[in-house]
Amino acid sequence: MQYHVGDLVLWYKGPVPARSGGKFRNRWFGPYMVSRVTPNNVVALETLDSEPLRQPINVNRLKPYKSADLPGVPLSPSSGRDQDPGHVGPT
View 1: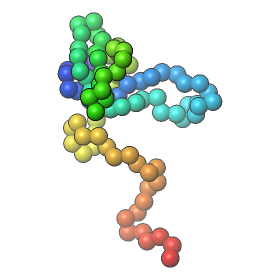
View 2 (view 1 turned 45 degrees about the horizontal axis):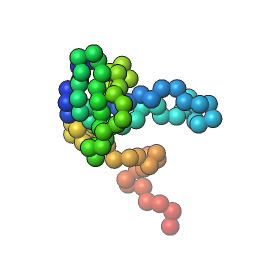
View 3 (view 1 turned 30 degrees about the horizontal axis):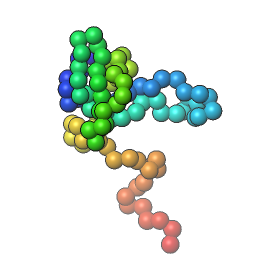
């Protein structure tokens, strides 16, 4: 996959210790913005607040970030509960 400056990506940080959530723990973090691309499949990333990460990342540990709303606009965090908008809570 080819990445370009300004692309939003998710970063795979790899295996985690079993005590920290195991197989259900999220291992993809981001979104991050690509700030520099080198010819040897390495990119420099920065946060959405324009703070650069310390180390360059190989493109094998990245995947494109896709938003359901607009391209490049992060999704708002979910509460983890599915709520029916027509449902009224207990009174």
